[in-house]
Length: 491
Image 1 (cartoon, helix red, strand yellow):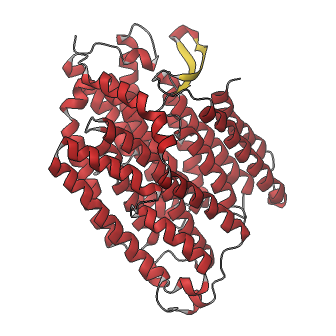
Image 2 (cartoon, helix red, strand yellow; image 1 turned 120 degrees about the vertical axis):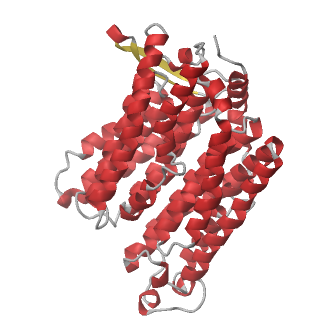
Image 3 (cartoon, helix red, strand yellow; image 1 turned 135 degrees about the vertical axis):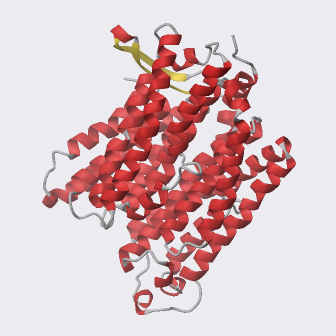
């Protein structure tokens, strides 16, 4: 079994084993087994980084076996510079989430931990799949554990939120399935994604395929105006669910644009690129303004995620190396920062049981260690230089200025909005005198919470100070993708 298969199936296997522990009286063993599974799954991904060959756009760590021979469906895996970092990111966030739920989750602990381990494996499968049907199976299968996480451990309106999440994402994916079947027939009976990249398709067909993929991936990102499910889901989801949803699941849609929309329908991508840029700028600016008026911390960070993911789609469709590389860096950085922001909210919610900004004030007086972490993550969310949040956004803005000055200027304005809503929230929650008895009685973070936040702090600072390992990996693949998009595929 290859490294990618191990990265996919090891967490899933641990998750299945955890389901055998049916009683909450066994919760202690469940937590330790889940942590061992999450750490082992993360360690498996590290040789992918150390063994990755720079300077080539070829798929690496490739595995290919016949799956459904009659329909020429293969179990085909591989990663390139675009997808490599998303695999260890997924496994890393899973470790943090297991630690985050250690004391908070007290009922159905085995099912909770199993759901996250299985979800981690499925998401790695999405980033690794090179067969269209295999991609679709993994892409859709991720809905099941997340649906259960929201529906079982969520807030008062968890059933509504879980249903909305499932329905929105499933409907978009049906159009993608039709597109995959069309490509299978057109290619002479192949589900190989790399083969589809070479197909000569007419302008009309490319446009239809582009919007079929757009329906699936735009909802997942989510792009404006199909973003309305995200705030509702974040508010109701447990802390770990919000962290994984923002850090990884949103990236499944962004990754789909790079693997399907742009290389399979390059002419349509260029023709409709300005539409995507406009929608992205609306997300960056308008949704940033919407975030400013939120009174619920989770809703504020949820809208912040929509705005930050707007940078990602903007970077893709300005079609230059700085923009695309910056967008991929932003995907990884947002994974660290958004997970940290939601976990910080979770730390406060576990103590006060409120997400309302008005319920806090002066937290720094009673939780100084925690406030220091929260300040770092707030600054990263605002795009402070030296943090992960700055690198990708800065690259995308530079790429946008090269593409069109006014587009670059509008994109850069998001840094002001991001700083405004993030620092406004930090000021109201953490600074000033202690505002009520709940805050007065708060106890600073314990060793488990310190470990959880320290892992994310190291990642945020390392990526912000030394982003070279991240950008070096993707350079060749990004250049190859842009060369491919620039070459017309019209017959």
